Image (cartoon, rainbow, N blue to C red; front, top):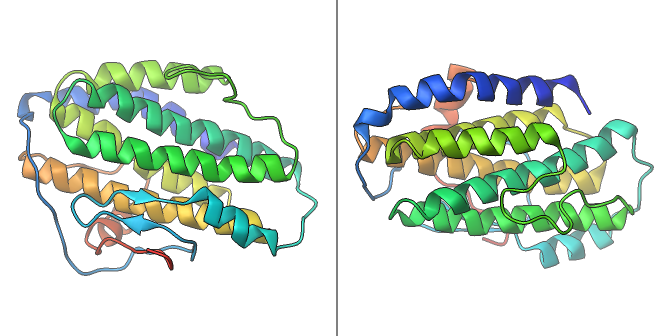
Length: 246
């Protein structure tokens, strides 16, 4: 496990409550899409579909398994193993937070992206099973985590997002922003992991676009706290990305 992941999440816990509550007065429901030109694209050529309505990006774990079957098994480093365990719980964190917030707000974006996060979790599970790594979320219900850091973050994020719709959308944007940072921190030349991480980062870029555009629909803006402003701007100004099978 690299230090960057833990540092980033602690920053989220410290900054989230202040930043999100400050936006709470702006909350109103809204819908619609955003477009635009730009880059901000990362690696990853796996299969996945994008909803033209809200940017929901699902990754078919069956397709992922088929693709990596042709890739030789690697000898993973301790950091790679720890990274897979972390990302499995991080994708669960996203799914669980969106599931819980989706029960509070009548906005389909939360339900759609929550279901997409399940496919992201499943894609990481393909790698855990391939390498015989214990699944940290086996038997865990919504809002239950093995890592105490993740457990604390779930509780704080749900509390912050419960303040208003705008606060909830800001929670979503920050989760996706940090997911991108954590995936980049764990970049590896190991082909099967790189394929899965590329798919996950593409999904997070699309979901970050979706949440920031929903914030705009509700008269609010989002300031990045983990990505540089330049990286953030390049991502959110870009079009929704399709995978090779999308």
